Length: 299
Ligand code: NAD
Image 1 (cartoon, helix red, strand yellow):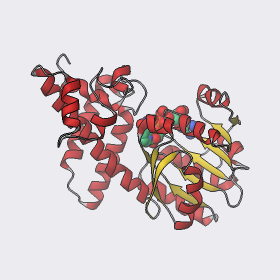
Image 2 (image 1 turned 90 degrees about the horizontal axis):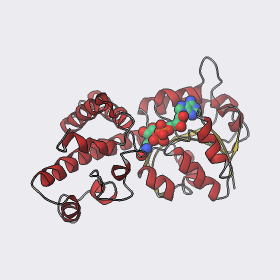
Image 3 (image 1 turned 90 degrees about the vertical axis):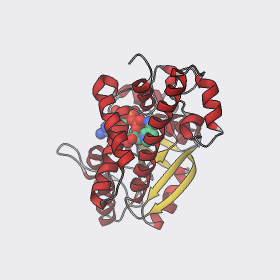
């Protein structure tokens, strides 16, 4: 079993770190939010005063942070703190599971390689339920060596582990996936709302569409209409889950990528616009399935 330093214990990182503890690893955790650290300590984690402190003797570092600037700051350093690539021991494998821009992932991978360290971008799919169940999909970008080394730890948090390509490739695949997810969530929300407006029961309509040609992940696992699926964020006041602000970030990343490659992504552009309006209306911290309210009568 390995010594793992886990940094970023939010909706995703918390349950992911808990699964590493359950698998028998010696896990030390750090988050800017002390309550998040305490929750993991209660489950058997060690802790420290800083990310640098807990990473110093680690075999693996796993990070699960909001965006590229946080990941660059953690690994490359800030005005007030050394980057982890300066403080970890030789042979330590660096695994970033956050969804960030591919350019940041490549910059960190290059800096790590210059120090003789393996770094892998390993963003995830599967949501908070997948994080808790240990069934996440990891979408990795990095060298073959980094991928093989990281698999040992990733296997304790996920069910599917893909090697998308070299450094940054995991992030490119991830933003393609999330752009598609946003389109599916918006489309599912408007289809359900149309049915409801015409007197249909959303549970019945969901059951029909789930096994028909409109079937998709949001209908199977994450129904946006309150009351259809007990465990979905929609039935819990759209709390927990995947925040609208994070979806706005990912849709910005996919549009930036599309500009860079001159790709046509009209559905992604429209979904981004809808999610930006939704965030500006005060929904940034709610789950992304709350876009359903944009279509439901009464808003
Ligand atoms: P979150 O906001 O719940 O958690 C982020 C955590 O990072 C917070 O606890 C915050 O205090 C901590 N943090 C921020 N900066 C830090 C720093 N410098 N040092 C230490 N801790 C720091 O976000 P989340 O939902 O857990 O998402 C994390 C990442 O995973 C994001 O990139 C997101 O896009 C991605 N993601 C989320 C989901 C989901 O369903 N929530 C699914 C797939 C991918």
